[in-house]
Length: 335
Image (cartoon, rainbow, N blue to C red):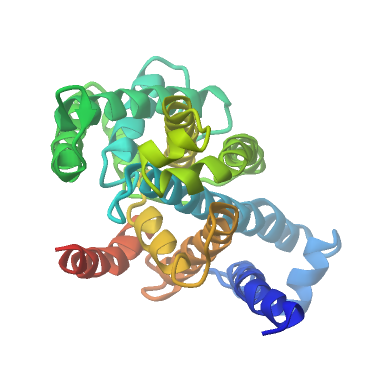
């Protein structure tokens, strides 16, 4: 195979993912409870048109579309990083309890008036979720540790236990809120992009960019870790430092996603496993995971808004319907 042909084949998945992202974003801007012709949508994006159309397109649909792309990409990149670190294709922020811990942190922050899940424009919101995610990771590590080393066979079981604990804590904390707050937080917790604003898009972009760049910078170290920790050490990789930084960055991505859109499961599980069928090397895997995760979540949100219209389904329910059967398939293959 010539170098040109090889480069074309390596670049094809990225081109297809980018085209799919553009198509899904266009569909997201066009659909809604109020029908707006495509020409008027384009005009509104360019800043012209009547006031109601401008408000719907620029203040509601555009932020929701962009937030869906960012959250989906962040969850997929987080999952790809965790799978590389743990050498486990079943690793996922949702299954490992990271998302549940982040939700607990976000709720505590809300009760302390640090942030509000209904309006996650405040940059401190993801910080509260991040602290909760780190607490969940610490608990999972304690449960899966054997003589000071992480037992990968006990990891998923430990994650299930931490998820159950996080759910119990959430229910306990919700009892302290009034009826309206509880109803709003429960809907948010199911996974929703309905509260997207310009500020939330900017906030999510800051966290996703920062943590994503850190993970991309560690891509060569992650490649080495896939060969085993001892091999990585002989190649000059600072194994423990790499693991700590990557854990923190992956947790920050998941926590920011939870703070802005609630608990959305299985994106970080499905996407990296699919991406690794067509990409090698973690620079390619991480970048393509981000693009593909963005497509999956934005498309799921379009389905959540249109399949049962005018009723809107939680986007987390859509991804769970897709992800649960895929998880069972992966589990059987692993066994």
